[in-house]
Amino acid sequence: GECVHVDLNCLFNKGETFDCPERVPFRLTHNLVDAMGLLGYEGVYRRSCEVTLRLMRSQCDSLLTYVWNV
Image (cartoon, rainbow, N blue to C red; front, side, top):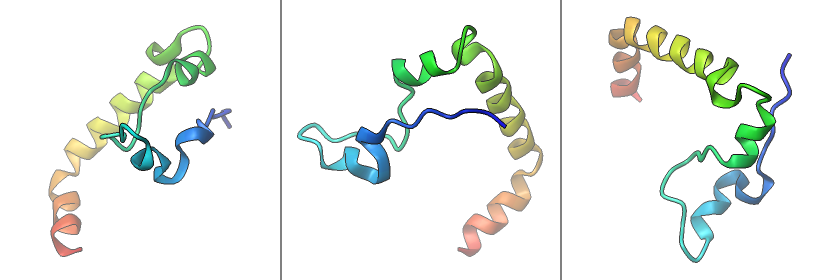
């Protein structure tokens, strides 16, 4: 398993209620990058994103079928 840092200040859409609301559902803050270790987002995080995007692209038709039926 991996240790995951959670920014409790923006948890559960709380960022939408700020004076200047968050416009994105996820923000990669400096605290999150620091929690990723020496390689930051160039390590496990980046590799995981690349693998996930590759998989989603290869299964695009299946994903879109699900999205359009929901």
